[in-house]
Image 1 (cartoon, rainbow, N blue to C red):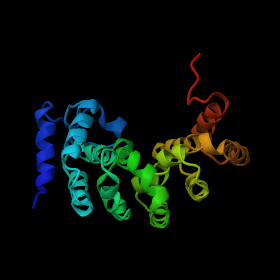
Image 2: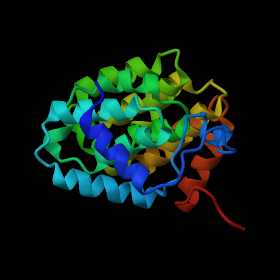
Image 3: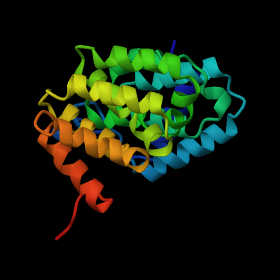
Length: 239
């Protein structure tokens, strides 16, 4: 049975977009060939914000079922919308078991979909609040044969580590980077760079030391971008 809330949100997407497209020039960039609705991110956010405001009484389990339905949807737009809706959820709605991300990631392909679901306000509040369960999930994902899950084991750290000084998170982040740093795929190398740069605000000295000690074994792009961020506070320096 199709989730009725999912159908309601999909109709709002369709109403505010053009004809869905597939196999476009964006496929190689975004990392998948899922159908997409031509709708701007601000419009998606506006839909999500208004809908979630009108459904603040939505119970945790019902909200989780809605997110699952969206993530298992046909289009990349529906999957991305799930991530956006989590940003506008209230704390009570976020108390689902984080292991559900393992199920969700079976339906997410490429950096755009993975990052949309695995970064944002929910991870900022929930990783520190329910760390034992998140730690178990992160370790499991980092060892998975699915590269999208391994990327998720990195990018799930990015939002919370940019906001919080939490030694539990930083210690595990370094461990997972060590586990994955020999991989050559850009999905992993760019994610390692992102995590290291996210840690600089609260762990600048730790990141600098780690970079110095592991310079020869880390992805070159991660070393380059992190060094620039350490020196300038920015990812890239324009000449």
